[in-house]
Length: 461
Image (tube, rainbow, N blue to C red):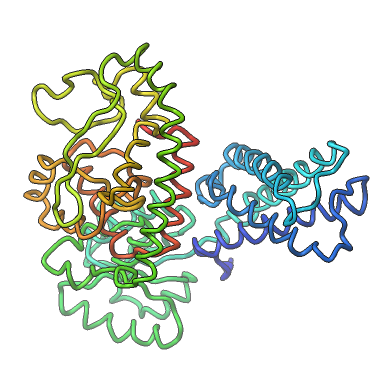
């Protein structure tokens, strides 16, 4: 039975979700306007396009915040319904209170309910269509893996953990791997082009072999496939695209042939915009800090006896040490036996301190650090000098984190919030290095949105 050659990559799926979320929502509104007493929108108004763009912007923004474009969420019925309802509620509320760029608030308040239903029901219908038909094995990317045994093992694990819409059709290696259920292909028995056609392969992931004989056999065949337009990806780039972090295999002596500064690091406009945003947002954050201090004081008296704030040394840009400001969330003398990494369900955290951490309110005083220039809004989280010295010995590339300002939030922070061991710190370092390598405005915006999601879903420790 022939396979379907159509497949959707991760980025294509996300684009598809965004486009049809907007299309279905607008179609739902048009349908209600034509076939019911829903008259919030005047379809003949010259402002209809502005209203439509505003609506689309809100839908895309809140869908992103509520993780509707996270493919694991998009493939789960319960999480899809939850996200759609939350998106519909927030979109409706914000939309009706933005005059000029949206229609005038209707006198008949049932129109607001119609608007919510038009958005929510329409997007829900589309998402069910996606789950039923688009997220289907016949549309999966069909991947052939080529490389040494260890590379194959790590690639298979990465795909199973991060990209279940990839169908691994087989692997080519020096020999068959024990306890591997993936189809082993002997390159000496059949030409690569025939294997590709027979298995309907849509992407080939390649890692260089140490054995010259195998490399000499495969390279000419891969060149011919490349000439024919087949997608061939290096194992390093493939893993990075799946995990959104620097692959562990790149942390060796060839590191600088792979990692470099993002071009944004030398873009003065980007750096100016970054600092301007730091100043503006930190001023708003400090005003918010002033507003919540009375409530934190009360909570502190009840469930967190001791000082309200604490200062702690952290390492900033170029290794400069500064004092970070936070609301205290641990018991007094939590580190009387020496510095210890914070961890999930840490027994040193007080009851009120746990609330502060889960809501991220303990971080709010750091807006003072941001305004002073010790930190930025976005960057690697600053670590304590004791930990920096220890981690720098374990990971020679750890100090690279200090080439940019530390941040109130960051890529590692939203992807891998807490690391309480050397192994976890290694993973977190790779996320930080990925940010330094890829730093740009869109990635910064993504971090901001993911941070909002983290706060809303109480993903602090």
